[in-house]
Length: 126
Length: 126
Image (cartoon, rainbow over all chains, first blue to last red; front, side):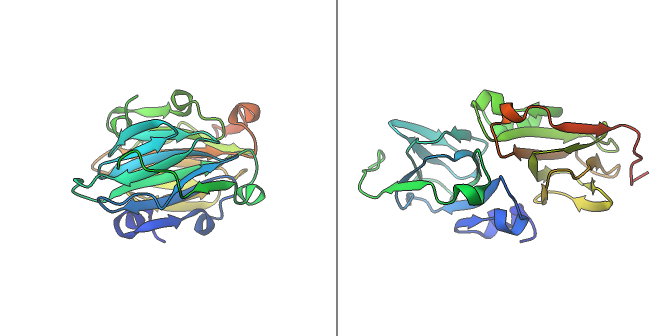
């Protein structure tokens, strides 16, 4: 990885960057979802806080019972135990692209996988 | 604050965003330095890890004895106890703009101000 800009241009799906950076407390992923596509499932974290920085495209972010329109420049902080899901709007002229920052009260390796997923919960955009 | 994109466009100096976001573990600032200008001083953190995401402009980042060229898309992780300083190159056609993410092994409010500054250390770019 040379730059996060390169990743924003080429990455599809989710690429975790913190390993390449030897980061201890901070996680960073570069993400892309095509128009009409949604997250594979709702998920939540028991310990980790996330900040989403949206770069390109248009879409919606579901946060528990709320639905937020997101696009270039939108910033969303998600606290622990909030359920979240995303989709790229079918009318978006480009994939929805965002950076996701993660952090908690310990080393990320100590926290490990603190995620729960819900594959049965319906999307608010259907 | 509506979006981080708005901040990138208008902010001069340093704007801390985490308060507006009610963030607990993650810090985020939006930063801009004009061509030819440097950080006000070298600084280091005893506990906090930072990730710099450069957005615009051209410049140099000093990390202890190293000097790194930075520009749009450059990503730099800085561990605790590393001394750092930045400047926007005098020939840059735009201000050097970047996001700085911060995190440690505790709440940011528990960590508090863990920075040391050195106003006497010379710049590597003079």
